[in-house]
Image (cartoon, rainbow, N blue to C red):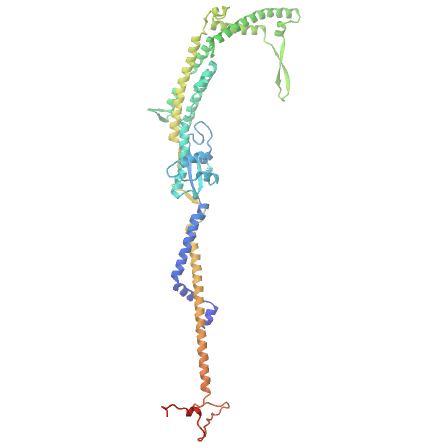
Length: 503
């Protein structure tokens, strides 16, 4: 029965006994295989597949609008650009991270997390392969540095925004252009304060230097500069004084004198032509010469609604209109240069006696530059206010304290699977070896038993060949008779060959 069981298979009890007899071998093999599997997954498989990630919010002081201090739109992809990551790895403990390979192999990415209600600040998720980091703490430090470098960069830009018109640009412009520059700069400064007041509040206080004021007070200091009354005063002074920005003041005044004389000549001709036109029209004849040009019409191209060209007839200015323009122009030149200067036929022997003297021209330029300096101070103060707002309001808020991992294979799962499989394999090997040994032992025992049985059978056969008295039987079953030699028979040589002792 036992031989049949071994041939058919092993019972559960026999399997358990075999494993228990070799339990240390089974456990040792299980431990080795499990450790090897864990090392392969931890150092080879997971680093190639697993990623670290962290989410954070970028809070801009401009509210829901993500823009740089100069108004340029913020592109979140710039947070993982080569220049940005170069600054990131300058952080202590991150210098060994291979950002060149990380960028080249696209092993880092940043995503904008959508907010359906649009109630939260802009949220971003940064992900990078774990192979670039020594451990979780280094990955966390890297992600925090990505956010902080961006915040620091935006704060620094807030302190470098210049709202003022550059001195060089201002100095190269005409006086009329300078007046426009001053008006536009004042408008820009007031508009920026209005934006901050709209985002925060008029009573929102900031400390700039040693002074702490509200946004309303900062705005009021700008509003007091280059007001409408000052603007009108300067515009009137420019018009009446005839001031003009030029590198060669004498050449400008001489050009005005030539213009004055040219206008006087044209005025006389127009006066004469005006009388001729009136006489010709009254008599019904066509005027000629300059009178005809004044009475004619000019044509100029224009566009109709369909985009085609049409001809629009526009009457030339009347003699009286042209005369009025020239007379007004010459009256201004006379006021600017003075009668003595205009009457100087030698061209330079008489100084300008009107309002347009070199000293007054320079004084007006200095007056405009003084207004520019005042507004430049206000612009610098606005830059300091903007920097203070960004220092306080520009932040990176992390929604998690540690970096999360995604992808790869669970170490615990690998350990369980490897342990189960290796234990099963080791147990199978032990059972196979034990069964093989048991088979060989059984075969050897069977062979020994067969040999013993054969010997016993041979002995029984010999016993059966003897009679009851122990004498051998003949072939026919009778007792074998012993033949005796006759008494007188001669002895055999063996018998006669006796030793001396026997004799």
